[in-house]
Amino acid sequence: TFLVHFIDSEGIAEISHSLGKALQVGVEVVFLSRDLGKGGRNLEVLSTLVESLEAHAGRLVLYEAVTADSTPFSHAKVVSRDGGAEVYVGSANLTGASMERTIEIGAFLRGAAARPVDHFLALVRSQSRQRWP
Image (cartoon, rainbow, N blue to C red):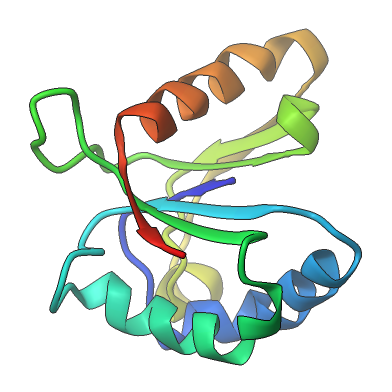
């Protein structure tokens, strides 16, 4: 599960091969982000990813992250894998600048330290609007 505020085509290009491999072996990939409504900036970028990985519909899921009162969600950057076995919490967006040209900071948490973050992601997902499929 990815919770990320800003996404661009450079950032997606950096991870698209790995996402494709994960989807091929049955891993569910979830994006929780902002601007996934009609005309949204992140929707435009993720639409390209969806088209390239369309064979994996159902395992690639997009949610527009919102709070309970339907306002856009946070500026958080979190990645969780294997149901919270390990999470990354940090400052990097999924953009070319964050991945290649700026100094970002983050931490990996494992085991018991990671579970609360994964529970947070599950809460965000439960309050968010599914945009694809």
